[in-house]
Length: 307
Image (cartoon, rainbow, N blue to C red; front, side):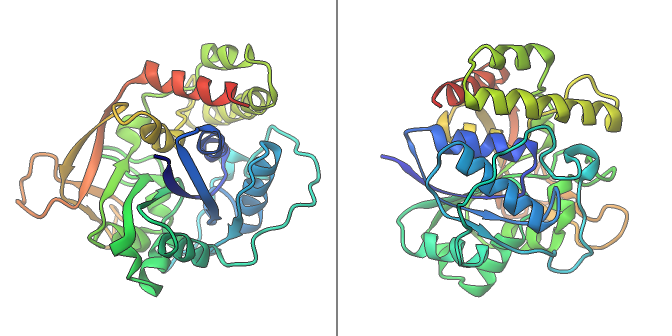
């Protein structure tokens, strides 16, 4: 049976590959794409999402969501994703239009009108938190929420915080305290899946439109990662969420208590993961602790080949 998926994203180079994976797998029924500001402004992330979906031939609604976080000032990540949010690939000019609904309404409608829906979030959690606040009945109908965000250890935006959570910690607090099943795929796992030159060469050999997009995007992504963080290759964070649906043995999770730091202090945005159960608090999230790196790249390759 196909899994009903809503992809909430902020493209973003790695979000684009998450869209690619979600749209290519025969066991995923992609109900729609809701877009949030994050890697760039909402005008840019929304256009990027629509362009990627259209370029890949995906017939799914793409809806523009929240432009600003619930409380804090807006962050963007131009240093990594560039002025467009998706630097490195030139899309044709398309006639396709955005869905007329707000992204939050797309989430609500998709969950309320379908059975056992999973929300996959690869950006800040603003749209999802707002949907929960507006229509709390959707919590009873959701299967789970799978999040690329947070970390068991160090952040990538501050010493404590990962970017997606840091963009809207209050929204993350709403999601993690909602009572719905949450799976958190954080930096401690996604930093293991590096887009090395060997990976880029491997995908280039597929030689189709999806591989062309992948290679051109990843070259710029890696260049910006080197300039910003001094790393040899950048981690391809976001597709790990979709890949974990395609192969449910890809990631090893541990059930634990996770609290979002919304104190606005030096650890603002941290995902406080009680790995050793010090607090004996209710376990509200399944936290990714390891990933099969070789299998991950096999899944990416399979997804690209399907186009």
